[in-house]
Length: 113
Length: 116
Image (tube, rainbow over all chains, first blue to last red):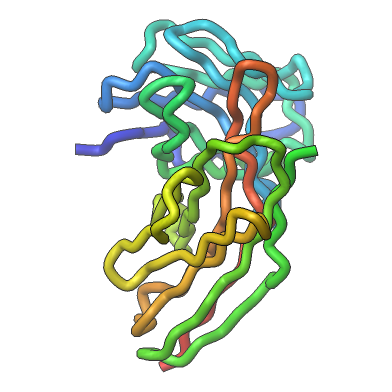
């Protein structure tokens, strides 16, 4: 059983398009995250949600909008895609806000052409 | 500022040998956790080991162990009997405090090559 899953694993799209990445965890965790890994492999948090409530919103353009329909799902919608959005996006989850051990999904490689 | 520094962008080791990856961090907290994650070419992020700062004993997971020096704010990862499957990018991570919230802050990573 996959603990944290993401779809799709690869996404190629053109500038200006809108796309979504879905994430689901079956660990029963309360907290979920989105990270961005750039071409230099640097990982940076974008958002965190706890029980469907937004907790952390780093300095991310408002073209990025996370949505959590329930605590097992955290989706990422990106409007008006730009070349600089090309990266690998990881979803992760942890038991709760104070359990720092995070479990990652397989990542989604987004390529904007 | 709470930062995590990995000073070795790349390391290499011969199969069956031992290698140590360095990590230093900056914090004003007294009780915290530290993590090492591994990212193989498959790009999956895998938790390798964690250390609780209040524990004096260094954490060990099979061939992986840490050398935790709290006063020096140093958290190095030792891989013994290196195997080809250990080749990966290794990230040190620290849950930095931001208000009442915690966010996992990663170092820039060390790319480990294992030579047969």
